[in-house]
Every structure is written in C-alpha cells, then in structure tokens.
Picture 1 (cartoon, one colour):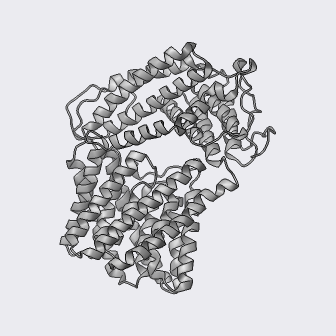
Picture 2 (tube, one colour):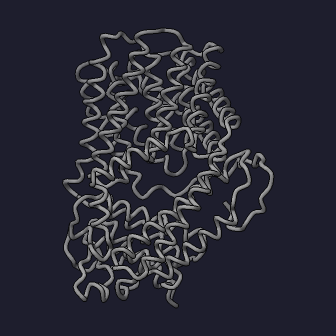
Picture 3 (cartoon, one colour):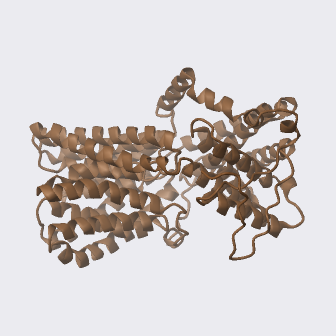
Length: 580
C-alpha cells in the first residue's frame, strides 16, 4: 500500500505487474539450513532403500523427509512441537489419499478429494502461520498419492515408512540444539539489529515498518524459546536496544556511525562467538530490579505455558477458520481452482492431473495480486524446469545411485534458489518432482514433458481464474478489527506509562504487535480485487499515532554501549562475555 493517502473509490480490478514479480532478490541469511536439512533427511531413507533394492517406496519416505523444510525460523523448543505436528499432518493427508486411491479408481472422485485436501491444508497452514513452504508440500504429497496404484492392505506399511522418515527429519532439524542451543534466537535478534540499522541509515515509513516487524519477530522468538539462559538474557537486552534505536528520538547526530555500530552488533550476534555486550543496565536495574522483571518477558513466558491460555489459543485458532474468517475465501479459491484444474486436465486425457492440482494449489497467496505474482513465477519456473529435466534425464538413468544423487541435488538447489525468487526455485523443484516418478519405473520422456507442460499451463489458468472469481471482501473487515485492536493497544500503552517497567515493556510489545498486524491486514486488503473502499487514511493515522506512542513511552535501559566503529569490510571485535 502506498504511504500516501488514497481517496476512496469504487471497487475495481487493479492492474497486475509483469516484470516486478520475476526480479531476483537477496538470498535468505539462513537458506542453507532447510537446504542441508532436506538433503540429510532424504539421504538416509533413500540410500537405505537403494541398498534394499526398493526404490519404488521412495514416494512414501519422501513424504516424511520433506517435513525437514519446516520450522527453521523457530527456537528449538517450539520447532520440536511444530515438526511433530507437521509430520502428523503429512501422515494424515497421505493416509487419506492412499485409502481413497485403494477404494476407487474414479478420476472425478480422486480429483475432488485432492481439491478438498488442498483446501483443508491451505486453511490449516494459514491459520497456524506455519510459514514456508506452507501447504504446497503437503498438497504435493497427498495429490501424488491419490493417483498412485494402491491396495488397502499396503496402507499401514506405507504410512509407517512416512513416519520413520519423518522421525529422521525431526532429528535432523532439532539435533543442532545440542551444538548451538540459541541459534534461532541469535538469528532473529541479528535481523532486528540489522533492520534497526537500516531504519537509522534511511529513515522512512518503509524501513520503520520493517524494523518494527523484525523487533516484534525477535521478541516472539525469545518468548517461545523456553527457560532463560545467560545468552537469552543478553539477547533480550539487544532486542531492547534495537527497539530503542528504531524510535525517532533515539537517532543521534552521527547517523552513519550509529548504523555501522548496529550492523556490527548484528554480525557478532549472528556469528558463533560470544554474544556482544548489550547496552549497560539502566537506573531501574541499578536500584535492584531484576532484568527479567524489567522487560516483563518471564511473565509472558509463564502466561504462554498456562493451560488456560493454551485452551484460549486453540479456541482462537478454531474461530480463525469459522464462517466469518478472512481465510475462508482463500480456502474456497483453493478448493474450486484445484478441482477445476484437475477435471480440466482429466477431460483432456492427461494421465497425471495431480500436477495440475498442485500447480493451482501453489498459486494461492494472501490476496489476488500476490496470487498473480505467484502464477507468473510458477509458470516460468516449471517451463524452464522441464528443460532442465530433459537435459538431466539421461544421466539419472545410468544407475539407481545416479537417480538418487540427482534428486538430492535438486532438493538442495531448490532451497538454495527459492529465497532469491520463487520461479528460480521452481526450476529445480520441477525436475526433482519428475525424477520421483523414475523410482517406480522409467517413463517415456516425451510423455512426461508433454504432460507436465500441459498441466502447468492449465493449472495456472484454472487456478488464477478461480482466484479472480471468488472475491474476498472480508479482508476489509480484518482491517477494521485491526484498527480497533491498535486503538485499544495504544490506550493501554499510554495508561502503562506510570506502571512498573515490566508493565510498560509488555504494553509496548502489544502495541508493536498490533501495528504489525494492522500493516499486514492493510497490505492484504489493498491487493484484493472488487474490494469495498478501504479506510486508508484511518490506517495511516493509526500507524502514526501508534508510533508516536511508542516514541513517547520508549525507555532506554541505559546509555548505549559504544562498540568501536566498524570500517567497511571489517568486523567489530567481540567483547568477551562468555561463549555459548
């Protein structure tokens, strides 16, 4: 959404970009983690099946191995629980698909079940905010299983293979906690410091919002990290320092030096050495107030562990999927688009309509503009990926080991490239998905390539058509609710000005969270077609008032620790305060 206010107008279809969605961006600072994890999680079961001469079972172990793609931004305590849920959800979707495939051979029924599973998986991933890769991997596995030959008696053994591979993926993703327990927290805090540095170097609404979102994400990561440790307490101080640097009043005269100092702190925090020394304690702590009381984070951790709070969170999750939810129209889009794509390809005689189902399912994002962007990216990436598959197919057919190594390579390449742009990652995903079919038996190359091209084009057309026809006017209602929540949070933050430091800190974090949610809701609604006029001026006014309140209630915990200024190409030396 533009920073300037826009005069409310009649609902209309907005213009769609053609070039911007295809531009390459910076790779993620942790792209190698899911890339290496999925390779390690896939290599163990695939090489085991290779030794046993049963590569035809790879599709079932791959379902569990792909769970290693999830949860890499979460602290290890939360990641362990999340991955358990992902493995169970993957197994449930696969089980439903295998049972259906064993009971019927009707293409219409299989397509309908595939579309229904895709819609449920989309709604569940959006409601839980699981993060990338979202529902696409779940839908890929369940849709492929629907069209695989299956007998009912084989289902338990195949699901056991999935659970076993899922257990390996769980160990691969959670195992690093034994080596670097606070690694995810350090990366989240480093992102907050880097975003604060960008805000100091280039003040403006865009960098301010990005910094506020990064600080909020860092606090959430620390809240979910489990019991406090000396490293986590130092990280809490660094987040508070980044938060203080975001406020306009915190910017000193030497902007470049302050930005360099924050970037130096971010580099040290992200590294493997000691956590850099945070700002010195403020007068509250000098008077005897404990650090955890000052930030109020321990009370929030205790609230998260409270059974009543957990029950309330589960009820809130169910309400988010209810009849009035803004997530429901996106799920309906998924249901209709996947069903239309599958039936259209089946009517044209395509032998693998599940590719069209997966293509359609992969398009659906928060709004129609983002869905259009993903449509362009997916189509370009798949078509280029088919060419890569044609080039690598002769090599993969030399030996079974070559086939396994090719799949592992493309799995790594997909995660290495997808953070630059989705279409670039799709160039690697497409040959990997096609090579999976080779584990059962070789297929004619021309047939595979022709079916995949046709499924990609028809799936993209049908999927976007469904997105354009199913409106989501509830997105505006989400903006109105976010405005109300932001006003309430701002009032509570102002009332907490005279409260103890812990209360002030909690109130400010709640206000920051509400501002992040307001911006997300406004951007989502702005990208929808046929939307009623949005209260854009009210959103901008609420954001400005909220940031003024954050500035007025900002409490520096003491003068900032002045680390030596980093020259270009050098690293700020780390003060010794204990290694992890």
